[in-house]
Length: 134
Image 1 (cartoon, rainbow, N blue to C red):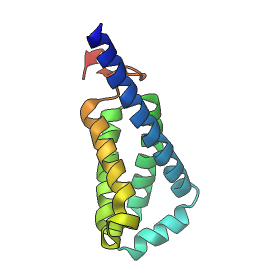
Image 2 (image 1 turned 90 degrees about the horizontal axis):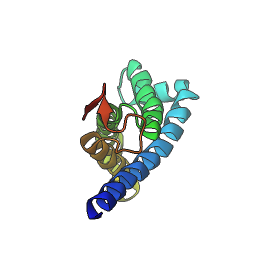
Image 3 (image 1 turned 180 degrees about the vertical axis):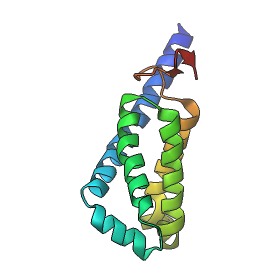
């Protein structure tokens, strides 16, 4: 009985982290998707090639939906963590922790946690890929 409760709590915890990540990344990805010209200008001012705008937008928007549904969460968790690493490194680090990169660091670590732990059983894939346990 105790193992069942532990599994349920762990899986519920993973679901809550996935929902939080999904909300943030879908909203931020949608903002980029509907304002690509402004994002291209912002990236250009940082010296980042324009094609990265599309990569970042894709990863945030569709990665958010992947987190919500629990599909390809390990892959998107890793990609979202990389995305947040570069957001910190290229944009936020110079602003310091408070009022700077604390949100991006939290998102990086939560994304990495999902990449390592998997989606949990409350997901479409249920922690499995092609029928095999991940």
